[in-house]
Image (cartoon, rainbow, N blue to C red):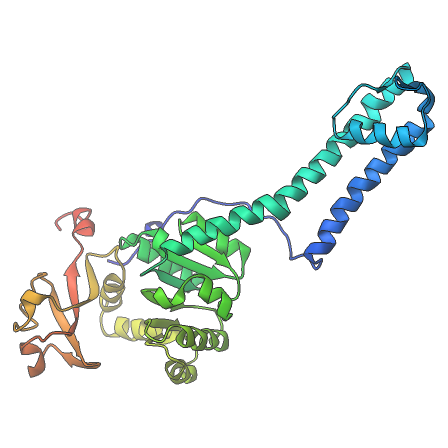
Length: 355
């Protein structure tokens, strides 16, 4: 049973703003914000100085330029001690129509600046440190394009907790989609050492690489293998000539979607249901599932056709070498064997009439 488009994980539609990265450094943004705020304050000083006859100083009865600056600052900051106050109708109108909007704008600028440069950054650093402290035995997905996104959806459907998945991508739109699926996300360059260290790559359960370009994917594999020598790496490679390079870079599994599509096409030419069954095996939404697992203690000494899971054993990996179900080596399972088996998907069968 092949999957229908409706079987895919449903994600809420998100409206994405058209935007691009700012070329301004952080310090330039900060200076610009403060410059606008002080320019607005300067406008208020000028307005108060021109209309100083409408103000009264209860201290000495004289309004100097220093008094105007003082009154402007306490007025903009909404402090208002009352020692200087507008008394004419024109001054009060100016305070209501001109000064008050400027006062609100200045407050928004200062509050927004404090949030962006202090509160938000502190909160994000604390939140990231909290997430990092819990990252262990997680799955890292490097690239959330078509293949990476489909892999994450399938992992979630197979029962993987989204909080145990970390997605790294440079596209804000893809990062938002991965976050909407419940994954931990990090917008950055997956070939950068610091980015991978931030997600504790050396403590990951496995790494899935799908960067969209073979050269980028191979570079990422090299970086991951350098930082995490024992973590299993699976990578998507589209050119057959690059498959060997990916393995030499340190990938444990190299997946070529073009070759796999060719296998499905060739299989369909030999039988109408071959491609359908292969898609069934690969998806959790089918009636059967292809699964790899270590041999269980009670299976040691048994044959591959006597699995405790009730599955159909297809292959055994022993010391890195594969043995088919017809070979004599699989008649007695040993400690450390990895078993590839076909098991029933009871949840899927329950929705199919007749089982």
